[in-house]
Image 1 (spheres, rainbow, N blue to C red):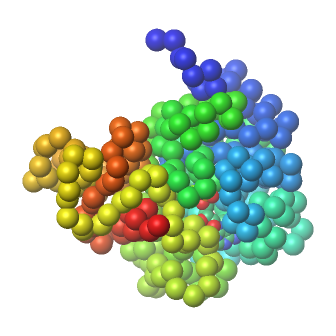
Image 2 (cartoon, rainbow, N blue to C red):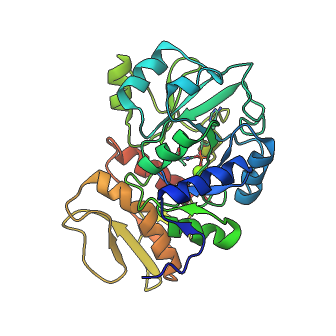
Length: 318
Ligand code: TXA
Ligand code: MG
């Protein structure tokens, strides 16, 4: 079948070189990762980073995650510590982001780190992202490829759904395997989790051999991804609410969840990883099918269930 989306490119050698050229010319491209798709640009270039903020309509106080192929290239931009080294050995490349102290000599655009003295870094596992990073001499600033406070994209078509032809070049890497944004762990002081994800607090705690907590959204906002209203499908999401009428979609999971019109099952066999993977895709589908609101029950608050509940609660905030 012919690809009618002229801005979506297969990740072959020729197109990876085109992607590299785009980055080197300070253009912004869509890039697959195993968590969600990113909007990637040269992290050393203020011009590139400015374009990312404008496209996403992102407030300039909200810093971006910087993507690297491996630890070698990181040392000139961040100050590493022992917790980082342990977690890196166990989980990287993979769906985890570390907040570290920024190396004062770093050439990372001050706009990318929102003038902070810390830097969020990640080593994506997706083979296309890794191939691209391997071709480049610069790290990639890459927030999720969605308009600020909307749903993250988990396929190249979702990136088109968000930006239409404003993004001229999107590398296709299939559906994101995880489908939720990376876990963010702050290692600048006592380790704590700023955003739950596929790498759970239990796993992180067991590697660091101490109890690491997910920080509540009280007090000062450390990570603006912690802003209450986020991950919104653009229609109201109601948690544990009564179900009304035809215009409402109902989300649930497991074999006992009704198979009726308007009912969307995130995992027939009750697998939470599968439910997480289907969450954004389903919310986007419901929104695009013309439903007026979504009703959902909270998921069990264990493992990745915490990340699902976190996104649902924020999607439900006005
Ligand atoms: O899975 C992911 O992490 C995806 C893919 C594309 O890698 N990226 C992603 O980026 O979710 P974004 O920009 O949508 O979310 C980054 C989060 C934001 O909540 C931001 O506030 C936080 O990381 N962040 C970035 N730098 C930070 C810092 N220095 N301190 C605390 N939080 C930071
Ligand atoms: Mg995002």
